[in-house]
Image (cartoon, rainbow, N blue to C red; front, side, top):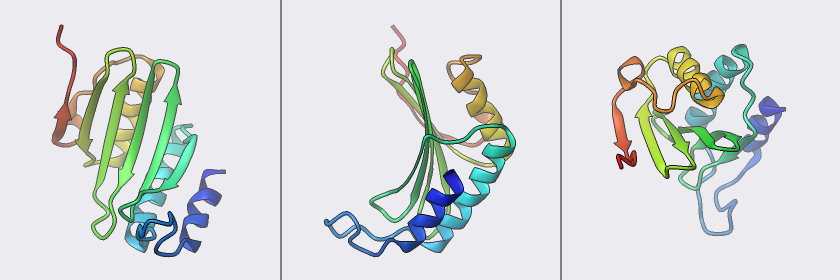
Length: 133
């Protein structure tokens, strides 16, 4: 279960990756728990809940033709949503404003209803490497 995996990150210590990575901090874990709660309310359980080598938390979903993740940063709890269409090698990343809106848009993306979300519904687009050919 995703909440159990998130709780297990609390037990990590600095250097957990044998390369000196900081353990996820309480700010990142708390924010990830908020994101996870909203995701579960919308029947979205992540396939992966892992520590980020920079002290944050990553929640990820995979489909045959696309993947999505929420990356929660350490210290600030700022959250970035990454969406990728594997067939076109694009990654769109946006800062998450309202968690509920972002989760709903990500759900539409994972279901194939949209290929690129409307960033204004969520936050500022950080990158958009969409193949325009």
